[in-house]
Length: 616
Image (cartoon, rainbow, N blue to C red):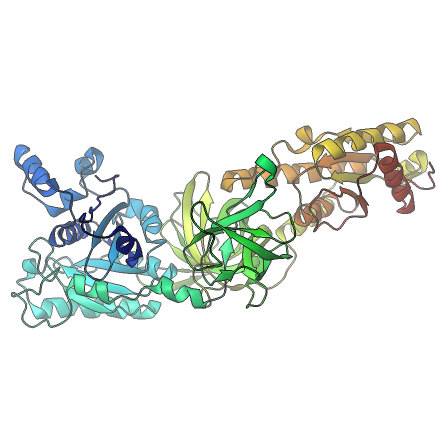
């Protein structure tokens, strides 16, 4: 257990198809450490008969053997490391069911050191149970957890005031804690469905009403869970959103399908719908929906994992957001304002590159500025902060290295949620509030600073131009390596033989690993490689060289970044017909012979003034 799933096996008499058709809901349980989360879950498992046969007796025997009093929490906290520390250190999942539906319930750790695990547990939940010890009262982490739930857009919340037996089952004790916490949540826009007085250890108001508290006439915990609405069912009526997880290409036995795969976050998609891939803006129509087994459907909805083919082949990247052309589009921007809860050990600071994960997209991101910092426990705002410390909440402006597609949190929560990764760890979670005002990008600001401090020698660019017969330029071939590298190398040789100053740098040397951009680390390394190439091009072209290289797997945003980094010198692009069809290139090479392609490139270089009056 602990790291294992505690599953309830359905009776053999239950028809498998009925079982598969039953409604399912994800619930997260949060609260301050030792306020009784695991005990509540243990009671839910036991009181609904959802434990594997013999499990309860096994745990009781284990406690007797070790001379420890039995606790329902031990049903979840069975890992040795967890029992040794006495706290839940990871998010344990368990399964149980009521006559109304099946549940996946996540026990999120309450200790302050494991808040990021709590974020992981809450990220897919549709509702939450938030526990507060009625005897100990509202704690700082109780407030942090309430804020995280509001950031994640979880609006269906029931607050359980646990350990009522320790306050003599008194109504006034219940109401005092309830009123204090309700006032706090009201500032966050979170209004719980109910406050339930419980004693998880005694089973009071968990599955059955508590005789000890006749003054309470509200629902039990199980009753409230069944009363929560299945929000994902309403997602079908919202605009279609599907992050592209991957694109699969089949070649065996004449199969030429390219299947775009992902999980539908909201809305519906049908065969024949026109779809747009964002932020690239590429369009096509759905030719077919694909499944691993069974008859292919004609329509799919929220939470369904799906693959589909297109009527026209386009180059789609993983991480793009697929939308329907006939519905309201998301926002596309590089800068946005967001509310962020910071979990990293080191503070969030300007000038450092982090990873942003939004849907399936992994892109580098930087902090532009901190608008204000909010004390999550007191809800007081502090203006003028330059960074965000651990466990603080802030409204910030961020900038990604390339545009991303997103919705605002008050429009479509799922595609407004993101996490910030620092190194290999989740360091923050947040929601996008709005697009930020257009300003000079961080990359453009870097180039402006670089040019102001550029130390030049005694030879001017004009003198180099006169001697070489050309200004320094960068020539980038874009497309499959086997097509572009031979042409780029041949161009260097042809120009050199005619007396031009030229230098070719191969893609492995220039940007090794550019295509491997999977995950946040891959995205960060990819952007770092591109930036290194752009800075190198700036030096080469300032020296008056015709700098030639070849790249595969780049798009228009990559080329724009290279143009900015190479400024004030020019960048000349040569794209093969096999390259990304969204590229805006000076020259597009068709399927011609190598000599003819090279002549076209050289001719175009001459027309563009890259090599003066050079003629073939």
